[in-house]
Image 1 (cartoon, rainbow, N blue to C red):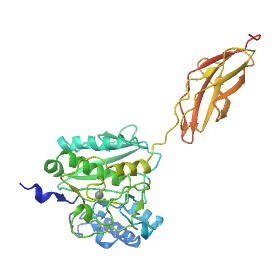
Image 2: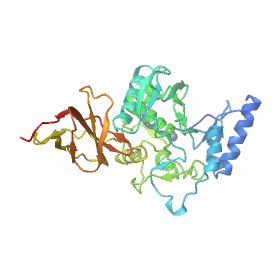
Image 3: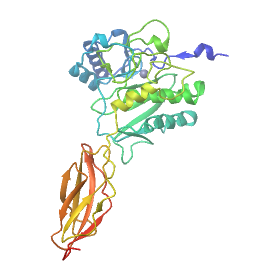
Length: 363
Ligand SMILES: [Zn+2]
């Protein structure tokens, strides 16, 4: 029974490769990436160049030429005192304007395919700034696309964001699902998606916490190792999906600290709820009315609009401010009123519509 022998498998081991089969242009790019990583302070021991010229940092993070150039430009220093056992992100994150990340899982079947669904649910269940949606290639509504490719092996790899977009490719070892099952495969896919949106290894400063063996530091200055506020100051094996190595006991579920890290990095930018109901005081005199609406948590201000058509065409603003009522005066005919709540991220949908009309006398 061999499970004991393979209980600790590096999620991040990359095959050692020969360098001579690379296209000269790719080789030049690879050399520049390596130079950039070294300039940025990344330890040589944590940089690998694969057979195809791909440069990998920290075991499983593919570094593109663009990303390596951004790293030097950013040059974010990390306080030496802050290198603790915490959750970390790279310097590069994805744009807050990305609402939908599509993930092409068409290469996956069976257990691996089901594991991808569970990994995507891990993200969508957190109600983050973006949704992750499974597709078979590019699709309408995708802001960006990550493609999952299988390769012969038992590790996973991906890369960090560049140009404010997620890294576009995940390589998933085809031995993971048959050897370790659904939960571990979900763990590995969730982990690689985490890199694509900027998460580093939680134990990056000492991979031996999850990988075993002797102390191994991935370095902090090259990719940036920026502590995510609110995450814990201790790390242990199995305490984070973003630990460097997986093992047969991984559940495929976030830890509480993982959830803190993600909801801190990518909070959903919420517009306030609709301040319904909108109501008027009973008809009293001529065109004077007091309009009331409901206070809503998260609202910075409220707006009241009127239209002269019941279909609410060409609405005109009557009020904008933080009160939950205002006086209006209808000069003639009938006004149709709706209110909404707003904050920095936008405005809610409209409330119910209330009709108010000019009276000829006081009741
Ligand atoms: Zn990793």
